[in-house]
Image 1 (cartoon, rainbow, N blue to C red):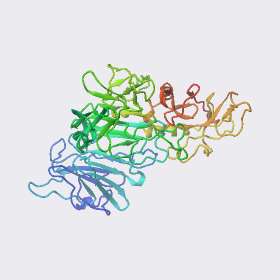
Image 2 (cartoon, rainbow, N blue to C red):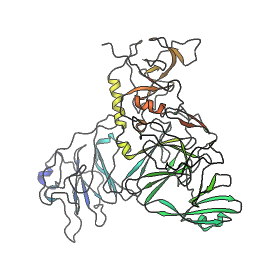
Image 3 (cartoon, rainbow, N blue to C red):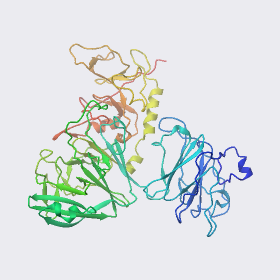
Image 4 (cartoon, one colour):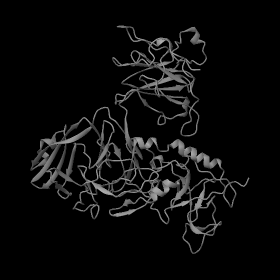
Length: 584
């Protein structure tokens, strides 16, 4: 049993074998802001931890003695199927989910006017306004504090089984709000060289500690925009519309305390929150392939989220540069609307498609539209970089919804709302499906060897030219799953086409790879279908959904593509797989 509210100096507690004194780093003093509650995290055995609040955050039930808490739950299983436990420690009152009981006997309370009580050995003190991570280690506990968002966070990890990216961080105040996530199409869980900093395949948008949004204010007409105070001022944002060499309209933007702004683009400068590069179709190992000239704008677009419920997210074309300015040159498409405000389009444009019915099993693809700098919706131009804009679509808005697609002319992003992600499968669920398929021991109908999908960590190590012995292969014309064999070539067929020994159908013969990016799944069904011709496997409804989505390609073409590798789909776009069960 874990120890809750027990002082390690108590002889009865000292004899309790479940209490482990800290022999590692110690907190010199309780980490506590003025007037904030003090949370004590009791580190007991690996996988067991409790917390108690003292100095103001009293739980429901009043003071005095409190009932003994329930025994700790068994250790959870992480995304890799390994043992361990991660338990969130959430402060606040009430008996709702995530709350923890205070120490027995009322806990540690600061005397009026006296100093804050010190935590006993083996206890980590966490103050609101700081961030702390307590980890189990053979040498005791380790505590780390920091964070700029003003949110007190804490997580506990049992044993060295969890990496830092897998540890759960739980907010102790209401400032940690997730707006949604942007997922780049064409990557199966991570970039080929790994996710690093702002360059990654998946980007989460959280509520900032201070509002970062801006809104339009005054309008100036100048002859030389560089000399305008609205443009040269480092404290103000502005958008410049160059009408001629002697006339420029400058719209000044001021701070908006009700919104947060996030910027996406190819530039690695500090104003860009999410750095994206051109997606190479069907090439997960893009070290050998380099883009000679990118078509993605350095400051492609910006997403503005409301800081208050329901946390609506809106998209706008173009992003502010390091000088907090947006310049639309003389050749860019721009105009003055009937209400008098200026607007324009970027060179290659920002396209958005909202699915009909949300991002669910019954969703249908919507119509691709172009978003202007001010967020209005227009029909597509004749070509991607044409000078004349399309027609204004008055009954549509720039509000992003779950499943909205954003195309930046070189990379396509999928927007997932926080609520949509709660109802979507996770990496753990996909890993469980993979283990379930492997547990069924599918066999090659010819060689009778057992087949197995590689793990999510192994899939990046195994190259398509050097597949493992148990790697499943399939004939995409019929769907029969086999092990690898180097025979069945037809002289009158292409190099990658062979004749299936089960049904004599001639078609492509490719290895199967499990789709590991959970954000692309529309349901939690078993992986039974494969995209053609790449061989990525996912659920039936997910495969059929993406098979009907026309994705922009180049400057004016559209075609369906695999979301896991961006390969253009051919034939029927997807095929149902036929597995051979074990003979015994």
